[in-house]
Structures are given as C-alpha cells and as structure tokens.
Amino acid sequence: MKTKIIIILLVLLLAGGMLFAGGTKEQTKPEEKPAAAAAEKTAPKPVKITWSSISVPADAHTKAMWVFKTELEKASDNRITVELYTSGQIFTQEGELAACREGTLDMAYFDSNWLAEWVPYLSMLGAAYTFTGWNHANKVLNGDIGKKIFDEVAAKTGVRPLGAFYLGTRELNLRDIGREVRKPEDMKGVKFRTPSSPAWLALGKALGGNPTPMSFGEVYLGLKTGTIDGQDNPLPTDKNAKFYEVTKYIILTDHVVGAVWPSMNEKKWQSLSPEDQALVLQAVAKAGEACAKQNLDTEAGIIDFFKAQGMTIIDNPDKAAFAAYAKNSYLKESPDISKSWDMALYDQIQSLK
Image 1 (tube, helix red, strand yellow):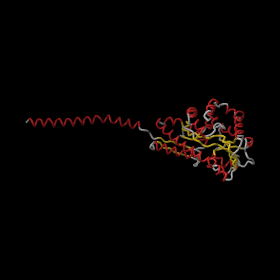
Image 2: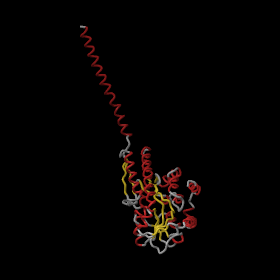
Image 3: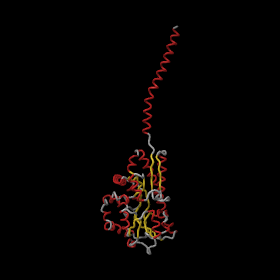
Image 4: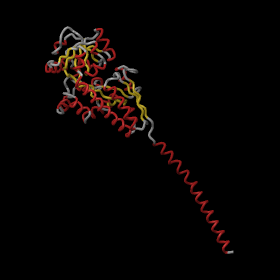
C-alpha cells in the first residue's frame, strides 16, 4: 500500500513539473517577441546611391566610380548599392551641381572652381600655379586642411566633398592658330574654352586667352568647327576625349594640378549611419588611389602618343612668364575673384610643398 502511494505521489510530482515547465515556456514567449522586434528595428537598412558624371568611360575618374561601387557593395554585403551614370547620360556638367544640391542626385564630381560661387576663396585652389604637383595637392586636399574646407562647403552648398581625386595636370591644347604659343602674350585673341563659372573664366584670362564658356560635351565639335581655338585639360582627358583629332598643339604649361571632388548631397550623407559613412569614405579612398595611379602612369608616357598623332609638343614654354602673368591677371582683371582669397590659408598651403 505504501509503495502504491509513493508511486502515485511521484507521478503527480512529475506531472506538476511538466506543467510548471510548460507554463514557464508560455510565459517567456511574450518576452521573446519584443526582443525580436527590437532586433528588426536596429537592423541596417538598404541604401541606394546614384552617381552621375560627364566623364567618358576611359577616364581614370570614370573607372574610379566603378572601384567605389565594387568596394562599397562588397564591404556592405550588397546592402548598399550604387547606380552609375557616365558620359553625361542624365545630367550636363552644369545640371549635376543643381541636381546634387536639390537631392535629386546623390553624388557627382565637382571641384574648387565650381564651388567657389558659394565659398569664394576656393577659387585660389584652382588658380594657376597654386600647387606644384599631385603630392603637394594631395597633402592639402586629403589632409586636415581639406577636411575643414569640405565641412565648410557642405554647410554652405548642401553638397559634401568626400575626398579629392587626381584628375591630372592641365596643359594648353590648341588648334592651328597660325603660331606657336610659348608665352602668355602669344595667347592674345585665342578663343579659349572654359566652364561657365566665374573662377574658370578668371583662369582663362590668367592664361592670356579670351575665355569662352562651353560645356565639356560640346568641346570636341567646338574645336572641330573653330567655335573655339583651344581648351585646357589633363593629357589623359585630351587622349580619352580624342581632342588630338581636332587640335595641333599641346603646350606643357603645367598651370593647374587638377583634382575632382566626389561629392554627396549633404542630407543624403547625414541620413547614413556613422558605420555606413565610414564604409563610403573607405570606398572613396580606394577609388582615389586607383584614379591617381592610372593618371600618373598615363602621364608618364603619353607624350609619345600625341607625337605619333602628328601633334606639335611645346615642352619648353616660359612657365615663369605664365605664372607672373597669371598673378597679375588675378589681381587686375579678376579682382572680384582674388579679393576673396584667404591668403593666410594660401601661405599654409604653400608651406606643405
């Protein structure tokens, strides 16, 4: 009898334990659901970035866009996707800035002269003979000075530069104008293409020419028809845009160390998490390295290509005369530009040569 009672008690205890365990399990369910919901809320959201450029496919800064896309999508496990539009597919050079400021475009390339309309002293960064070469410009634009400048640009324009890519060193490129150009006085009367911003127009004057605003996409035809007599770009751009087909002279003035700034709409930038911002900047750095390498490598051997096309290369222009003429031109012909220059910052830049 006692044995039966003990067995019954054990069965009841076991049954009770199972019920208790079952009850506990049911009680934990409501606690688990909020935790799962919280995890869903904190999961990183998908991000899409659209980037437009007028640059042609062979340009180093066009290829750099693909490096950016590859690096960023890989680093984010394809949670961040990048849509690229090149060769002016969706915007003109002028249209890109308006679209990026408005937020209808996420990213585009700009430079100091374009942005100088809102931050006037920036025109000195694109002025003739400010930088001695890419090493100098890189120290400035991708260093502490650059970070301060980019913050100011973002605050005043709604567009944030994320770095600076080496575009190449700008040289004069002219049609057959009936004479060789070796000093600034030889540029008198030359219809010289520039972008339409005031800082670019000032550069055209500083080189001795008659600045003629024209969108980049129209330059080839302009040179072919004689609407313009010349333009200036880095040699890799001259090659990729096939300007050698419609011009005769390249004059190695080395007057501007060109850099383009991959820039993002500021609201878009601020919408990214700090972690995503870090991934974007890492991708920008990788793309910038690729861009600089391609342009430096190309510049090292490109002169032979132009000679083979029958072009005349003037490799000994009077650069000192061009530099002196430019300085005087900025002061006298373009005082509205030069009066805004931050000379203390300019001196700081020169100290980093």
